[in-house]
Length: 271
Ligand code: KIV
Image (cartoon, rainbow, N blue to C red):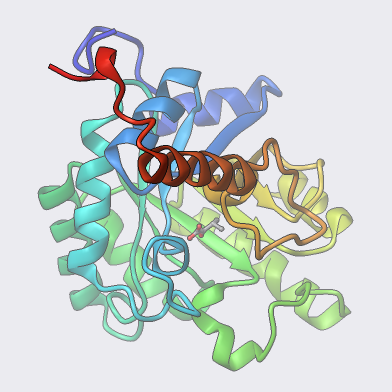
């Protein structure tokens, strides 16, 4: 199928209809053209160009170092591989916090230069001004609450968030504030399943979970984790659909052996 063929594209309105109809929303991360093309061909609803690219593509320990230019590079590569899915692009650390004018100009750069369809920001009431300003430009915004990796130095660890009553209550209020501001969906990361289910019931926009149980409107995973390419990360919430680390390793071993032994290339592989 051509990348520009005439399929019904997933929009933010389609996601809302899916929630209303009780249909689960599927989302995976993607950072490059080749992977995005495979994920989109599989029929995924949303591809998130996550700032987890900072970890899985660039090898940083946290998501903080990735820049706006680098996110735009990843997002534009993904957009070229996508025919149907909604492409949501993470706004990187430092591009939207504390200054709503800068937030708007960062979001405009992402939309103009990458061709993505929406942006995602981490945080609740403390970034509502930035979210509102971005929305005034007609740019759809996805929220992200619970474990927000850009705040890892505030949290100190990647453990489950909002287990205590006061943090859970604040998360519910944040979700309602994001809905009221006009976000089209919210990611809830690593929080108790019953709290996530409650949020999904109490707000009308789609709630996409990662480590947030099954009572939400959809699920997202980091593609390198679910394929088992990353063999250093095995949290409880992750289902691994493959062990690509091992499979790729054995292909590389065989290639090295074949070249060293003179078996590759053979006559049929030569001109
Ligand atoms: O950057 C990312 O991959 C994310 C998902 C974990 C939701 O934000």
